[in-house]
Length: 226
Image 1 (tube, rainbow, N blue to C red):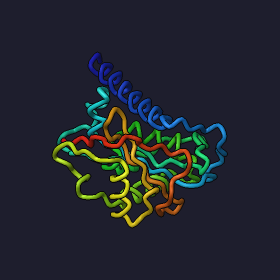
Image 2 (tube, helix red, strand yellow):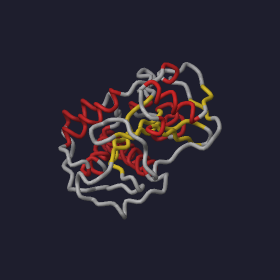
Image 3 (cartoon, rainbow, N blue to C red):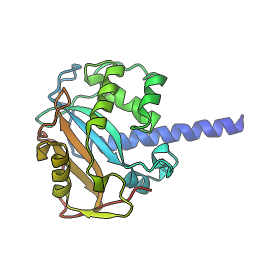
Image 4 (spheres, one colour):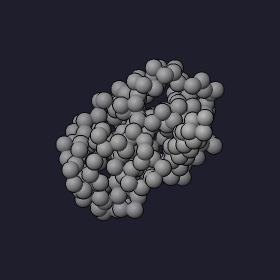
């Protein structure tokens, strides 16, 4: 009984850490949802955010026991979210009551979004604003992720890379035959954190709006995959 309680408390703490990390990450850019129309389906475009797992695992002690940080999986890019966004930098959130995402959908998403708590959080906070069912929303998440072509040097680097943010954005634009301003690189403490990709509602590449942040450093470090 005591062991079960300890496992339950640990699992709950890990879920809270994932959700807190997701919330903090979403609001780093200082954008506000206060001016957004929270009617489901009323937004201008999607922002697909792909976290760089090696950076997350190196800087978030609470996440190192997660499957995202399992060295046997060699994760590089993982889905952090597909967020409805507006051209003026506002974004809707929590647009409708959210039923828990089914176990079948969660299991299907774990290979690209390897945290059950994050999947539930993203649906409640962002997916409910898409105007889609949970099944259709996560189908779009996976479709957008699978369609992205990752340049070879950023797939599974065996050692740390030095890269200019603008160069990385251009490499992704060239690989995907997309405008350069469809891609935004974010960084923290000199390290690459995430790639954000701006997509139309039918998942075509498009230029990002005013509120999407971008790394301003001349160079950043891309940590290697395990």
